[in-house]
Image (cartoon, rainbow, N blue to C red; front, side, top):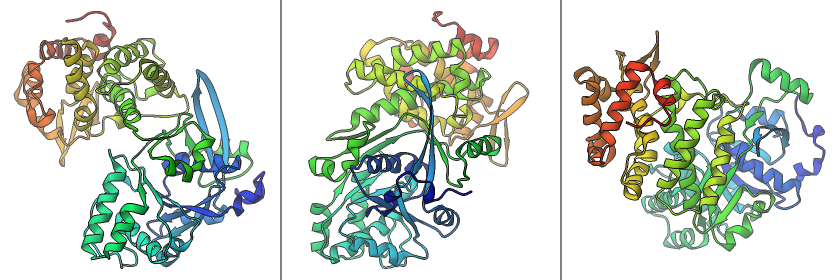
Length: 488
């Protein structure tokens, strides 16, 4: 039997009015934002459903229709040190419309006064200015679609809405507003509309944080469906941890009343604290550890956390070097609590989070997430962060490409080759061919174009990285990592 509304414990949930327009059908939106709305509806708080806009006609929309727009969120993970499993049938979505074939139906929702929220997740690429007419059916870019929808609402004489992009861009709300205003100018829209956009609508910066890997497959999916008693083409796994931080005032809070249902929704005037915690403690630790863990023989994050040595290394790195160097003042107890949550997330036995996938765009991630930490650590302590130095040495070793095929570069671990999926791969390939390990360290660290600074000016850092790199090449990465208290 396929999932359908007859299986709902409260069928009235499917009769709630439409209050949200959502651009995107992806698992992050369904497993996080829509999760919060569904939870609030079940508590009688928000009492509104979501109209979802799908960019194409292919895939997805039919699956929703066949299941009465229901889907199962399978929460799996560690909560306060204990395993947690929960299966939730979400009834938050009312219908899914295709932008390609149902654009007029989408525009018609602008005339619904009950719709007061617009959510999007169209990837970072989707949040860019494209010079185009908003009268197309439909416009190509998401910002142009949104501008067309807002203009339709303005012409209907209705009030503005709260707009929350969730794309992973700092200041995503500000960026989207800027693009909409550019499109207003290009399309020569009336000044009254431009003023309405500026004054009547809230473009909120936001940050989303939840690992939502997607649907189970194979034997694990069969086991789940046997347990549930129905099939679900849209089921998705989500970790326990959840955060949706939104910048907003009291008006925003009032409209986003679903925040009352779950402490994972944070509506505050400034969300920089949440961004820094995630970027440095979660993402930054991942980036510093992925080379070490992968070259030490661990395929997944949970495998590394199950190893006593690696768990100790990660914990010390995060608590003694990452946290003190965060370039934003955050209370120690907040960092400690978040650190415990991060380690629980790393340990999650239900998620197959591959280290090799974390190495994607390794250099860019190191620059964005970790170099500000390194510089601030020196500013605070003026000494070498030893665990960071090991992580950087492992990064350099991982980036040692030994062959190139059709423009793709590969490193070597034992007898196997691994892909180096990084824009700097060619640079490192040539560098390693022409230099000793010490030469590589010196040239990389002094490369202002890579880091925005000459890192050889940090007292002792280049020497320590060189020592750790040479030892890793002679003895092995795991062996160097195991020397937890041996400093060069």
